[in-house]
Image (cartoon, rainbow over the protein chains, first blue to last red):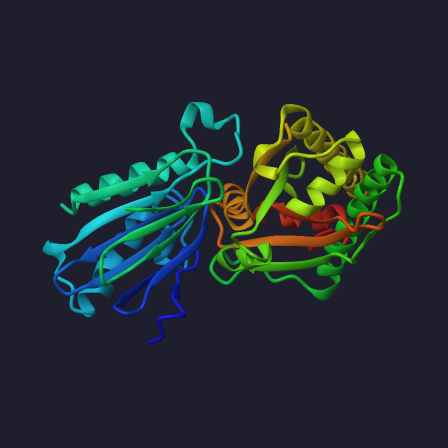
Length: 163
Length: 209
């Protein structure tokens, strides 16, 4: 394990880490970063979700692409690393809309729909959402620390804030 | 097209897509050159089919602040064009267009924003005209949109928007370099995945063409 090299989570993927490793995902746009944490085992998981629902699109080779497949897969991976599902808490970030696409006025942007799907799924799984920094017009980079459970969010115009 | 493994295209087909990109970029570079009255050079476009999550790497420094113009198109061919300038390039272009000192990228005023939108729109609309002439397809540009943010987040939004149903995207990428200020821009073309065969057929190299 190397402190200076955080584990990168790419789009449509998820990763699990324990201290002292950190998890990072850069340039979240309309995607949503879901950070799950077991504070007792200090196991952290981070998913970079592209779309809300696997049943609406065509099949994908990546469970991490959709909210409804990514979150259960991330939990299973965290359990393998020693996390207990009933102890998990969540923080969610992303779901922005940087371009003002007109057709989104009626159906909501992909970002909005991603956030709504993630919240609904976490509620169904009874995982409390401790903090969220979602929607808006800005892309975000997030770093997740398994030791403290702190999620740092960086944007181009507001610096870094901690959730 | 195999959705999970991705579309397989022959060397000749990829070459035709690259050439289509080449003609479009040439026209966009000419517009830039006319607006600035300087010489503009461009690299030979690269055509590649990538998994969408992998394609994000093409944004280079994913956290780099850029000004991006997105021009989506519909009609017989659907997709998106994305033109990106980093802060230095955007300032250099605006300075010469407006002949005044330029605000930092995050603080552009209305005039600076509309100048950038106008320049991007002219470049990308001309790109589409060239692509339409070359392929014989009717292509209609939609409203151009400007965003100033992290390169990775911007490309991500377009990739997600363009390729919701597929795991793969065709990307035609090129760099344009303007000789006086050295301003560099990047153009990416993302036809929707199922549109690739439409384009190839129109170019006369697709299966069943």
